[in-house]
Amino acid sequence: MRSLLSDLISQRLTGLSDTPTGTLNKRVYQALQQAIFDGSIAPGSRLPASRDLAKELDISRNTVLAAYDQLQAEGYIQTRSGSGTFVTSDLPEDGVITDKTARYFAPVRSHVVLSERGTRLLTRTGVASQQWGAFMPGVPDVTKFPHEIWRKLQNRLSRRLHPEFLTYSRHGGCPQLQHALADYLRVARSVDCTADQILITTGTHQALDLLAKMLCDPGDTAWIEEPSYWGIRNVLTINGVDIQPVPVDDSGMAPPENMPENSLNNPVPKLICVTPSHHYPLGSVMSLARRQKILAMASELGSWIVEDDYDSEFRYSGSPIPALQGLSSDAPVIYIGTFSKTLYPAMRISYMVLPRPLASRLKIAHSELYRGGNGLTQLTLAEFIREGHYAAHIRKMRLIYGKRRNTLTRMIEQELGPEYLCEDSNAGLHLILSLPDSIDDVALSAELEQLKILTRPLSAYYLRPAPRRGLLLGYGCVPEEEIETAFGHIVECLRRRLFSAGTTEP
Ligand SMILES: Cc1ncc(COP(=O)(O)O)c(C=O)c1O
Image (cartoon, rainbow, N blue to C red; front, side):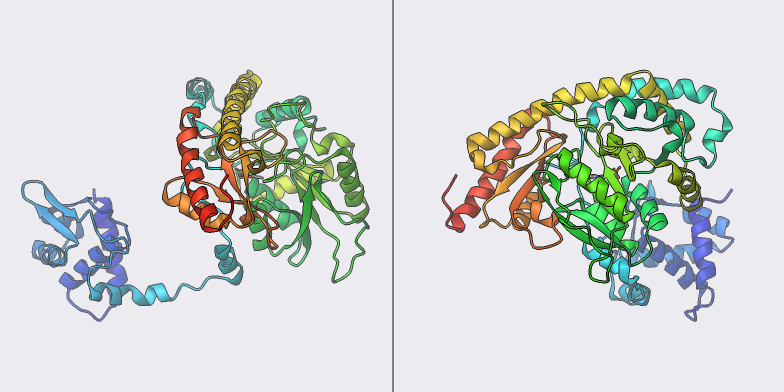
């Protein structure tokens, strides 16, 4: 049987067969060099013995030896006596060792032309390169996930798994999960729903992508909160939806006083995207009056309200805030929930509760566009909820996060003063450290990143010039005992900047 490497080299040799550069020695050399260069053969990996590779490629051993010699002379590979030939482990990141290599590959690189919308997306990226550590916002403590319980459930279920669960998903996801979720949402979130309204998606981003594609045409308008989650902006924009920022105050999104008349300058929104139970990122709760106003507006204008209920399970004081969706029957509300915060983000399971007239249409569209899968994970999750483990995990995590939040709040008050704490509704996985106007939150956040302290600048969440500065500090993934030291770095950098800006030291 041929090795994977010889399959790869043989395919590359075919690709190089019409290059005028000639000899087989040179083509084998080029094929190997290219594969090392583009990472197909990883740094540090072992190459087959020349005799074996020659046999598998059906070429002479001298040809392989000549290619290996050339690669060794150029520093791509190294021979260790007694152990074999290895790809150099500390190749430069771009793989460029000689001018010759750069010339060889340059034409391919310069031909990358992205679409206009793709290019625009890359100028507004939001994903942080590191996702774990103090004070990464929006990330829960994934180390507390009850793997043992999950494993037992999954083992049990996989023993008598119907083949259907391992095929493409239809009907909007695993029916057991749809039922478990409907029962949970009615009680825990006051969502008015039955299982047939639930569509399981691979994260909130996919849910929004489907809504943008199925409910909006390019050029249609969506209202989004100002400030708002960057993911919503990116998904809508790449689908050609024109996003209109609507200011948020202490009562949530504040839509215009008068109904917009549909005109070129003032188009009626197809979607109104809100986080009413816990505004992201400021943390306010949408008041009842605002909820009623937005519901009335949406009904009048024929818009869909998209309710992103991403972390409402974590509220540390007061009574739970019911979902907007349950406020009136037949409300034009699409409710989105996710397991990214309650369990862990890499699970990539979220869901939509769809108004009945939309449900079957969007389920068909979902399987046409994304196919769907994860049957066993969804089934395990259904059982995890049904047996009460989900509610127990939330209860446990609520206590842990509540303590972490208190510790961080106390540190801010002690070290900087209460004016540095942004008023919010005591919920979620992050809080906002308010900063004076003299402090550039983007620069401060970048400086902290150099010290491996992960924060997000508040101003980056605004589409228009930000009226205030701050840092989003996630406490979900920071053990209590690490909060003080990590926060100390923030205080140090901030004091230095306040001093340079001539602002009174806190
Ligand atoms: C407001 C808001 N909605 C949705 C999400 C993403 O959810 P998901 O992981 O389900 O895509 C996030 C993630 O941080 C968020 O902050």
